[in-house]
Amino acid sequence: MATVSEEIGTKTNRFSAIAQLSGQKKLGLMLAAAASIALLVGIVIWSQSPDYRVLYTNITEQDGGAIINALQQMNIPYQFSEGNGTILIPGTQVHEVRLRLASQGLPKGGISGFEILENQKFGSSQFLEQVNYQRALEGELARSIQSLSAVQSARVHLAIAKPTVFVRERQQPSVSVLLNLYPGRVLTTEQVSAIIHLVSSSIPSLPVKNVTVVDQNGNLLSTPKKEGNETGLDDSQLKYIHELEQNINKRIETILLPITGPNNVRAQVTADVDFSRTERAEEIYKPNNIATEAASIRSQQKSDSMSANRPESGVPGALSNRPPAAAEAPVDVAAGEGDTKNQVPVDTRSESTTNYELDKTIQHTRQSVGRINRLSAAVVINYRGKMDEAGNLIHEPLAAEEIEKINSLVKQAMGFDENRGDTLTVTNSQFNILEEEIAEIPFWKQPDMILLAKEIGKQLIIAALVLFFLLKILKPFLKTLLPPPPPPPPAPPQATVALEDSNNLALSHQQEVVSHEQNITRAKQLALNEPIIVANVIKEWVSDNER
Image 1: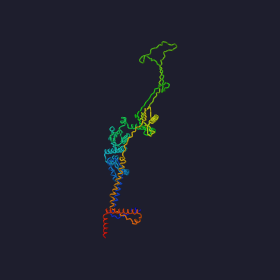
Image 2: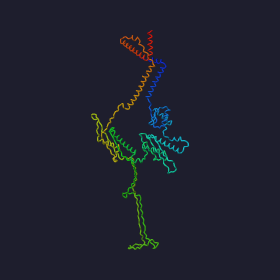
Image 3: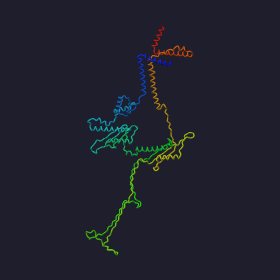
Image 4: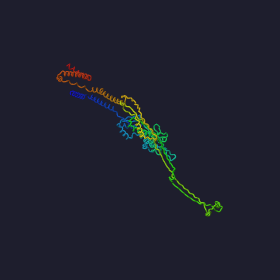
């Protein structure tokens, strides 16, 4: 309790000493406190610098100047990267600033669309109107193409012929598109076709063949499909084959994984795929080579005719076609027969037409594209691992029955067809996995440790600066302003009288010696710090002794 009371008394004396200071010293003390607080706040702010994030990137110089001017008006700190035209602001204000800039129409972009026609002057010529319309159309098409994720920028060039009333002299328009893709991005055939059809649909009377698409490397992307297939290489076909093989590999490994365990099976499938499109139309006529009674008759016609052959007769002369026939006299005349003079020869004719049905088969065959001609699969299975009696891991081959079961499973998984000519090979062998020795990086060279060391060094520098300011600048300054604390009051004499034993007497004597040494030390410090006061005290002592 005595110690607490002494501390309270010391603090009270200090406050009373501060209150007794002059106005200049009080002002200096306030300035020192303000400087200390400002230094601490500055160090904290410096140690916690704001996290800058991207506001806009790849902007033009015109838009960059307008955005920076707007940020200065909004009193928002920013950083500008000249390499790629990127503007950085504190991460907590990115979304808010984007919305505020969007309300101002920023960024405008380097491409102008149909807004060109809004500021068209009165009295413009027809040529100028046509040029402005063409520029506006080019800008709108470029904006639409830039909306694709892989396209960084685009330029569109229109070649529209002058309209004419003569049909034979009309020329179709053409378009050239230059694409600047992001690094590492490519456009698929479907995306290029989409760009071509987008441009073709936006311009009247523009055929698809008159659209040319080129990337930043000068590669022609709008190659006709028929020209691309002449080499036999098609990206979509190669992709289909790769996906088919990977799918079969996955099915094989999935079905064998519960048996062999992880990382114990490797499969490779090669697919022979036919992408040829074949169409065939056949008409087959099958004649009737069967018995007559089994034949089917379509139609049958019969006709019988009889005609009398009368000889021509008449008076010889010009009116007769032929001379009369010679008279015939029968050699033998049967008895009882009448007169043969009146007998006439008769011609009999019979016709029969029969039409039989013929078999007719009309067949139209269209073979599917991507038909599998042949599959070839190779599967390698690792040896089975087990522990021996000594607890060591050993590997042993699989049994023939297990290999046969695995062979059957793989055939079912891959869709094995013997008639198609598919082949399958299953091999059991021990895997030779080479374990690469990775050189361990010392912990002081690891990136995480380097970052941690930098952060710790930064905090140590801040702490060193604070201690230097407090101990070397602020403390001496406060010593010059504040007077030294008064010496402690001497110990009461009743305490020394109350001591009975010899130990207490020795302890009190030691305390007196220590207090005497402390007084001497304080006197020396007072003489060093305040020599004028000490001189005045000694002068008073000398004057008192003289009296």
